[in-house]
Structure formats: structure tokens, C-alpha cells
Length: 180
Image (cartoon, rainbow, N blue to C red; front, side):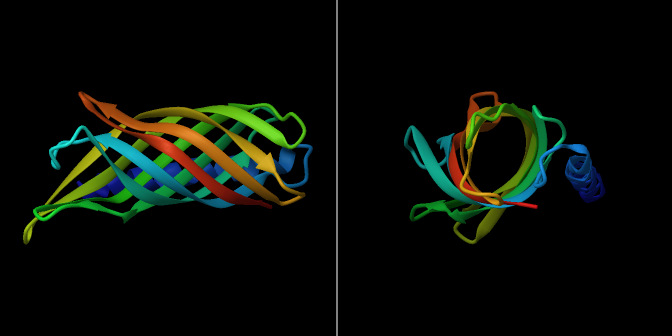
């Protein structure tokens, strides 16, 4: 199982780096980017007796412009704000997402739509016992990049990371990017 996941991580990293290396062919000088985002992800409650609950994730992002329209991006995230009560504690050990984004620049703003693939691992701690489970699914959403200068930018988006049966992981995020 671990060998299979490691191969997927490597493949996603290679695809993202291909996107970054393809930026040398584009006209604009700074097309690769690295960034960090905070996402407040909502999911349907399976453990806490309510309708939904939120966790807070931090994502590190690496991407690059493929053409004037398309970008590729890979992101790696983990929970920093767990959901817990007296019995349960829930968190994501990791979430890895590869995305293809399509957008168009209007001055300092670049709205986009995105589609890709997410896989990750979640952990539920029940007292002193722990249960982990992996997930993988198609991801989709949209957002806008805002340029604050030649290299610095902001990003806001809404992304649905997975929807498996009646379970869904989705939410807004905001972050900062540095173009190179």
C-alpha cells in the first residue's frame, strides 16, 4: 500500500514540475509560483453528533503556467486545527492534490476554474485508539489570483476536495503566492 502511494506522490510532483519547467516558454517573466494557503474545510459529520464540522488545513502549493490559459499545481496540506470532543479527535494527516487550472487575466485579477485529483489520509483518535483511512477522488472548484506586484500575489478559492457517497470535503481558502 505504501509503495503505491509513494509512486502517486512522485508522479504528482513530476507533473507539477513539468508545469513549472514549461513556464520558460511563456511570454511573461514570472510564471512559476510557490505559495501557502489556509483552508477552512467543511465535512459532513460522521463522529460528533452534529450536521457538519470544520477543520483548518494549511497547504503548501507549487505550480506553473503552461500557457496563457492553463496552469498546473500540486499542493500538500495537513490539519492544524483538529476537530475534537471528549471522546473523538479528527484530523487529516495529509492531503495531496494535483490540479489543472484554466483562467484568464484581467489586469491584476485572474479568475480560474480548477479540476484535478486528491488523495490523502485521515485519522480518528478514539480515546487511546487510532483509526486511519485513505481517500482519493476527483477535485474541482474555482478562485481568483490577485497580483500585488511583479512577484507577490494573493489567492482565494473554493474547492471540493472529495465527494464520496454522502461524505464531502470542501471549503474556502486564502493564501499568498510568490512568482519566480
